[in-house]
Structure formats: C-alpha cells, structure tokens
Length: 89
Image 1 (cartoon, helix red, strand yellow):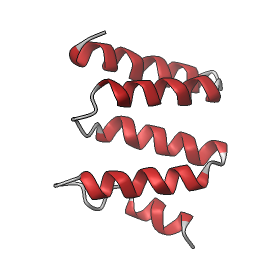
Image 2: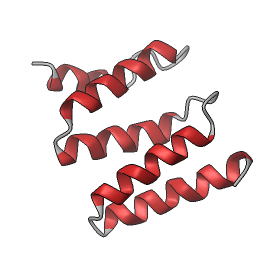
Image 3: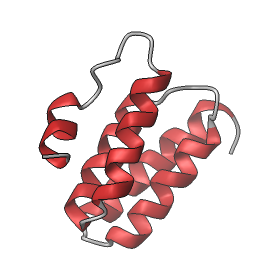
Image 4: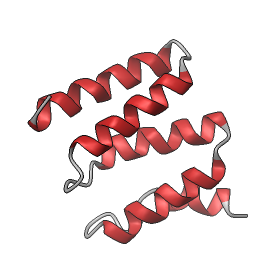
C-alpha cells in the first residue's frame, strides 16, 4: 500500500469496521491510515478518528489528537474547536 490509495482503502475499511461496531479494530486501522501519510494532514481521517475516540471514551487521546491537528494545520487551526471545548469543560 503506497501513496494515497492504500490509506484511502484503510480509511474506508475503518469506517466499515466502525459501522459494525468493531471499535477497537476501527481505531487501529485509522491509526495505520494516518501513519501511511505522515507528511499529510488528513483532516477527514483525523475527524473520524477523533469522533471514534470520543465514542469509545478515550477523551484524553481525543483532546491530544485535536490539539495535534490544530498545531499542524495552516488552514484548519479551528479543527474540531467545538468538540475540544466540550471535552475540556
């Protein structure tokens, strides 16, 4: 799996796993998809990943991930700002 197609397929697979409520495997696949393109800020993948983290109750990892994306983003500095505020109240 090289280039964009591999991580796109992984992203779709993670969504499928999430849809059948296999949350642990979905989380692992999202993480692999994000590692596939470390130099690319995959906003859509990160957003789905954070929402999954919130759903499964890993709030500290969700907050950490939102802050990471916000620190790396040039156009999406307000990435999931509403969710971050809700999680840190």
